[in-house]
Length: 240
Image 1 (cartoon, rainbow, N blue to C red):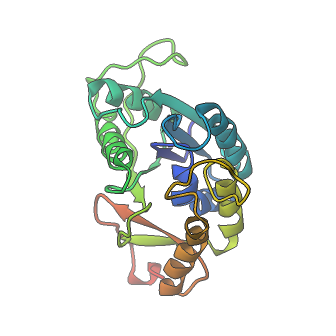
Image 2 (cartoon, one colour):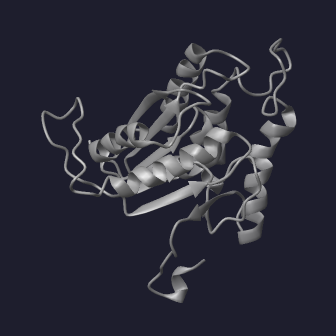
C-alpha cells in the first residue's frame, strides 16, 4: 500500500500529541496516512506495553489511519545505527510516502531526538540504489524510495515552528485520539505514580498550545513543524 504521509514516533502517543490534528485533516482531505511507532513504550511509568498496544490501536481507529505498525525497538535504548536504519528503510520502501512526519529534533525525552535523527537519516538512505533491502511483504528486491519532505513536529520543548497547519476543525479529533491513552494522561481516580505528562496541566496544554499557535496566525488551533530544507511557494500569495 502506498501512503501519502507516514507519521513516525518514538513512542505510542508521540504522533497523536505532535501532529494528530494534521493527520486527521489530511485524512479528511482524502490522503492515505499511516503511523509507525518505534517502541512499545515499555519503560513508561504508567500502564504496560500491552495497555499501550491497545490504546494505540484505539487512537489509530479514531484518527482513521490506513495502517499502524510497531518496530518494537528497545524503549530508551534504541540507537541510530545501521541495524535500526535498515529496518526503517524497509518500511519507507514498503509504504513509499511522499511526506514523513517525525519526532522533534530535540526534546526532554532522549528517545525523541534519537528517533528524529534515525528517521531522517533513514529517509535519505532509503533513496540510495545500492542499499539492498528485503521485506516480508516483498518476495524480492525493494525499489529505492526517498520521501519528498521530512517534517518534524513539536513536542515537550518550545521550539519555534517553521510553518503551522490550521487544525481548527480537527482539534476535537486530536484530543479524542490523545485521550485514548487512558493510562498515560490525567485521571483523578488513577492510583498510578504521577509523571510529567499525567498532570491536568499537561493535558490542558495540548489544547492551549494549539490555541496559542493558532492565535499567532489568526486561526483557532494550529500545529507547528520544523523543516530540513527551505519550504518553497510559487507565489507570495500562496502564504497565508
